[in-house]
Length: 199
Image (cartoon, rainbow, N blue to C red; front, side):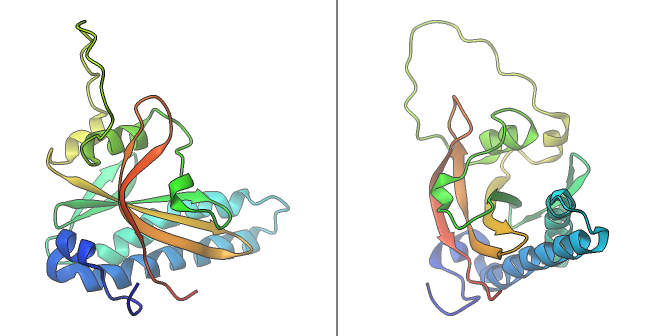
C-alpha cells in the first residue's frame, strides 16, 4: 500500500502531479467530516443518531469542497445544493456505504434512481455489462438531471467510498471508479484501492 499519503500508480495516472496531495487531502477531509458530525451529535444530546448521520452527509461535501478548492485547476460545481469539486477532469464524490467495517465491494446505493445514480451512470466508467440486442427499439433515455448539465460531458467520476460510524469513526476508506448495475443499486468496481489514513 505504500507509505501514508503516497499515491498509487492509479492515482498518478488520474491526477498526475497532484496525486500525492490528493491522497493526503481526501482522507483528511473525510476525517474532519466525521469529527464535525460527532461534535454535532454530542452538541444536541439526542438519543438517536440522526444528528450524526445528517451532519456527516452535509459535512462530507463541505470538507471535500474546502480541502480541494485551492488545487490547481479545481472547478466547483453545484449538485443538488452541494458543492463538489472537479480536479484534473475528475469529479470527487463521497459515498458512506456502511456503518461498520465491510468491503467496498459490498457497497450499494440507497436508491437505483435519482441524482447520485444518474451521476454514476453518466460519468462513471464505460459499462462492462453485457447488453442483449433483442432487435427492438428501446425508449430514448430520459433527459439528464438539470444539475448534471453543469458538468462537462467528458468529466469522469472518482468515488470516495468509506465506512464510518459515530462510535468507531472512519474504519475503511477507498477510492476508485465504479459503474452502477443497470437493474439495481449494486456498484460494480472497475478499480478500487485503500486510501491510507490515520484516525
